[in-house]
Picture 1 (cartoon, rainbow, N blue to C red):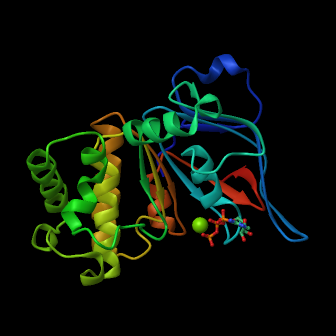
Picture 2 (cartoon, protein in one colour):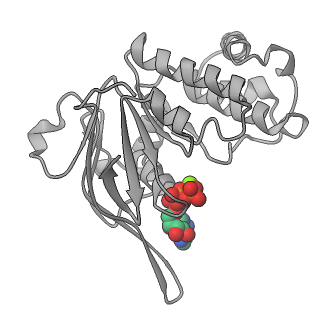
Length: 243
Ligand SMILES: Nc1ncnc2c1ncn2[C@@H]1O[C@H](COP(=O)(O)OP(=O)(O)OP(=O)(O)O)[C@@H](O)[C@H]1O
Ligand SMILES: [Mg+2]
């Protein structure tokens, strides 16, 4: 593993440190309640993620990894604490502002893909562009280029139900990268891929950091995937520990 000690750090720090950080969490708590049951998915989490770094999040099932990405991406609101992305306190944005902010600044690869079943592969990939007002012809060309990069040129007209699990995953990755977002949040992006394809996805994410100056936060169970990262953070019971 590359040793870039300051790629991400855990613990307390002054708010001023937020400059040059792709994302900062301060004392974030998130509890899910279901009837009488309570799950503390994130417990007092303070983290800073440096711009232009590749951070792997590991840990057992149920440790809070997906919740962390959802809070970072403004999909879930924390019960308490602050979440800053690209220097912006996303807790202060309205729902509508957050949606636009997310579309322009974040690329999300969901654990279960979240592809739209009625759209073809290229239309799914193009969603961030078309929602932002791109012309269909421009969006189609860009989406097909992204699919090509994922080795899916021949699947552009397929609907999700006509794709394999790994193809759906690569389509979701293409969609996350198409608008060249500053921060990419990827939930087990290689989980459904054979080792060869998995490696090529990791190489691509690494390039996003090294060549384009993006930041990647990737949840993974794979040691090989974590190895590509500058830094790993292990979550156990909603608490981050240095790996
Ligand atoms: N919407 C929800 N309602 C109730 N409990 C939830 C909800 N979402 C997550 N949880 C609980 O919060 C905990 C953390 O969930 P999370 O999805 O973040 O885990 P994870 O680390 O991503 O696990 P995995 O590796 O299995 O994907 C789990 O115990 C889960 O059951
Ligand atoms: Mg998860």
